[in-house]
Image (cartoon, helix red, strand yellow):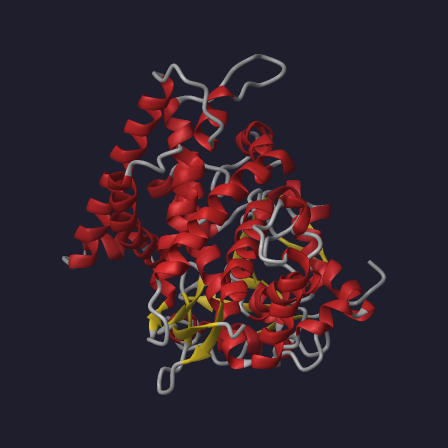
Length: 447
């Protein structure tokens, strides 16, 4: 490569543990600080060296140009025993096969069908929120994304029991996965903690629910248009082979993990930022009023809500749910003129890249209008990574954009958002970058 990229070692490592305590206690600050030390910076987690890639061109090389030379890495290896071999954790060639089978479920025509569920669920839930009183928004949004995913996956809009069971089981499962990815799973499992018991019980309940729904769908005589039916019907062109029940269970578990907390966090951060910036909220309300004029958003409206996309993009830049990603080279790779040995551990942080002032001027400022500027558009092609990129990019990205847009359009069309005094919101970096203590007030819009 003609460009010179630097490779350095991060300062501040402690004897025996290296940078492990910083990663566990102040992870966002750690990865932001590493940008100043070079394009590729080596940290240590105990005795294991980790190559943290900061330069967007090198990240793009890993995700696109040399994607076939990398496996998913340590995060996904730790999660695989608990979530199975779904798209998020599987290696090649299984990943490519599964992606081809699942991709039709996220085509534009299918998204148009899912919009009806998203819209109806959003209207019902928002109408039930108390007005002028603090709302625990992070919990409400998690319930919203679970309901949407459950109904689009299983067509179970009439079965409130299934939704209640998933809502009750999934949070403990998600938290357990987050901790097992962050620290050695064998250490976590050995501790006699109530959280371990809740994790195991939540996992078993989810497994039983999913298995029962798969069996019910296989035995159904009616033709359904939900995601599970599409997974059951999917066939390879070459062989005509479909997915086993175990593989379908792994894919559904993956969708539950990837399609609930991530979307809830994104919508939550947007709501918080709108409450902090009334001028942006008013501009967004004007756009929604003009484009929709009181009607439900259709699939053609998603591209017409231009400022909405800028607002969501800016929230994703500042608070990307998938804030930290791992990779592992399957062979020796030349990365920016430096040899990366097969089996090395590689991390990159979308949070760190998105907060780089050389890429995004004034990065800590919420400024949606930056996404209308040609300079930002050019930078974003290499340095905007909320959904990853390349063959491993998030297959559910169209679903996530539609869900966030529909919910927010429904909300700002009917209500205004306001901060709750004395309730500061904190960014918590676990499996996702979630808002903690997210409370807002909503009031009916005037007129």
